[in-house]
Amino acid sequence: MKKLFVMMSKGHSSFPINLLSILFIQSNGNYLLIYLEDGRKFEPNCTLQQFIAFANTHGLCFVQIHRSYAVNFEKVVEFNFSDSSVKVMDYDVLLTMSDTGKKLVKALPQLDFNEG
Image 1: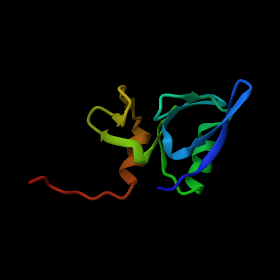
Image 2 (image 1 turned 180 degrees about the vertical axis):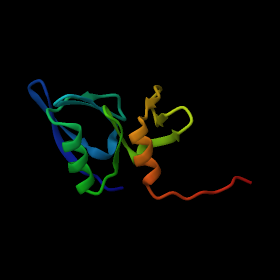
Image 3 (image 1 turned 30 degrees about the vertical axis):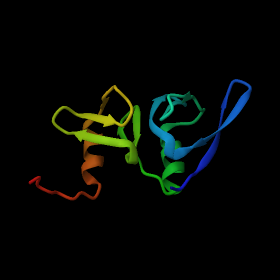
Image 4 (image 1 turned 120 degrees about the vertical axis):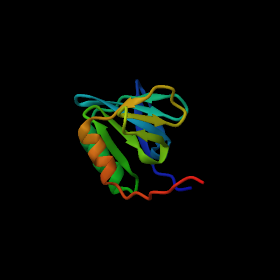
């Protein structure tokens, strides 16, 4: 499993964070709230677009599903287009997809299959 670490600061301390451990990101203007698999949260000073561009140029796939949310594609369990929700592994709350977010997700390569 590949690892890509960045340093995140919290208070007077810095922590190495594996970008693959990020579940999703919530935007709050020029700050982000980054949710990790282990329950920790970090609030770096950058925009959602800046973070997505950085992560995706390093081989990761973060998809902006809403004006305020981006998800780590590798951590998504389900995109539900009928109720505009996204289920992320190890997180009990469903995230909301905007119409634009749905279009972005539907534009990703897909393989249709039938169960049975």
